[in-house]
Length: 501
Image (cartoon, rainbow, N blue to C red; front, side, top):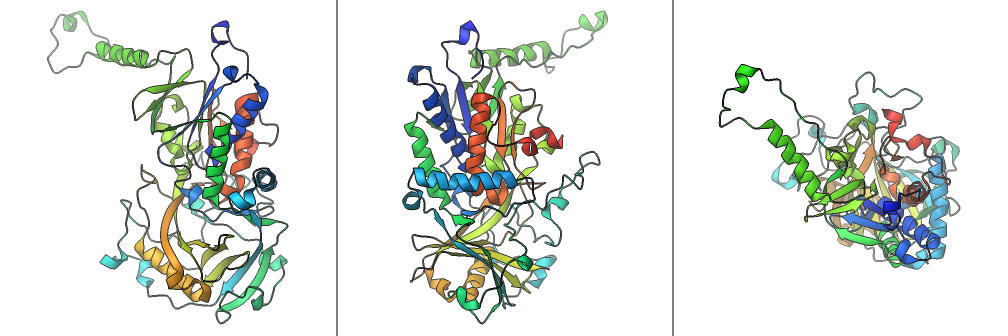
């Protein structure tokens, strides 16, 4: 844990983790587990506190397909992370009976090419589409027309010439949706291999994964089981919103004004602020609210603050909130270009259980200039998770993750497509449809890094559609950074914060 001064030797460290999605919960789980093994005397153990303003897994971590693939990131910066985390999922499932507790299982995976499906007309949606009442969007955020998917969303981000990514550093897209392996190097299979798809619209079917290299989980159940396990090892939880993080030793600089003798003799007008008094007031408030020898104070919207030695920002699409916090003043927006991509999903309950076959369906000739794509994940409990209809460019999500952000029009389209693709997923078995924000990084890779020059600040966010796959390995690596000061399990150089500075 590092050497402490005599003053601090009897004061265990306090570690704050912000965000109870899969990354934050995994970080908490591995950190408290490691601490419990290292410190037999519970009185001397560092405290670990998880802060979440809503519920565990209330956004993307609880509203995604939970698909796991071992080799689909090969050749990218996340290759090692993905392979290690895929294997870690299997170990966690074995240790905590994940098959029963969060629906972990291996499965076969297919890429299906679907012929043109006559969906309701929406050609005007490409230009200046005027929404009708029936197409209204249940959100405070304006819906943007679909971007041209022949161009990666990453290329729509604006950079200065100094910030422009180079060819060797530019990743392929923002991981807004899962990219299947090249079907040219995988085997074609007959349509009857996936009997629950309509053969009348199916033009090509390829198997792109099997039980040796693809699997699935129910991400909400996984997140909450790991949280429950972490609590048995001493994790504390606080439900509140972080409004600021301050360095307890930091003082705002004084503003000095040069005033000549003539002006000094004049009385100040009543509407002029006393700059010196204002500066002192700010310092006095800061000093009064933070009476601790710990380097940071985490301020909560419920009132009060939590003194902390180390702080991890793991709040997904809301990670850029830290740019408003005093202690993160050295972090720039270009270092964490993370936003939320709104993706819609459905949950269905077919009359008969669908086998363990995940399908990535590419549908030709719809409103997009290329293909429309949906992902279908049957689950062991008999339900089927379907996602697609990522209508917008990345955006800043609402401050409240519980605020509804789904488009009635998008969920309606998704229901229509699913009904046309599979007779087993007819309208009458679809229970509901909603949306969530995937935390996408402009360059397609996450940030897993300490904040350079800080005393104990860290960021772990921006995992895109691979957050469930890579969350556990990220959490394990973060626990090593927090306890040992470096990660020995994974090489995190690709994910460092200053890579994009």
